[in-house]
View 1 (tube, rainbow, N blue to C red):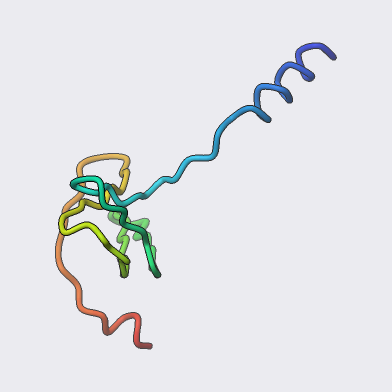
View 2: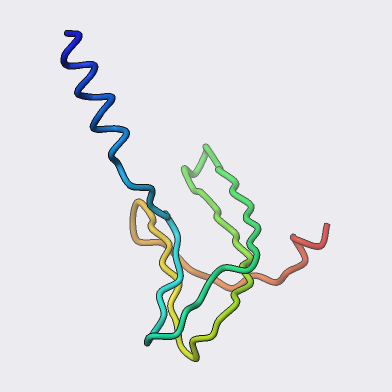
Length: 86
C-alpha cells in the first residue's frame, strides 16, 4: 500500500499543467488572453447551465480560434456586455 501511494504521488507530480480554454493562432503569430470574466448559472429544473463569457485578447495573429471544452454540444448565442457592467 505504501509503495502504491508513493507511486501515485510521483505520477501526480509529473503531470504537466494544462489550460482548459485556450486561444489557437491561425499561423505562427502569438495570441493570448488579456482579460476574461465569466458568469455560470445552473437551472436545476431544466438541468440547463448558462455559461456567459467576456474575453479580451491580445492578438498579434490576424486570425485565431478560441477553444472551450464542453460536456456536450452547446447551444450558442450572442450576449451583450450589460451583465459585466453591473
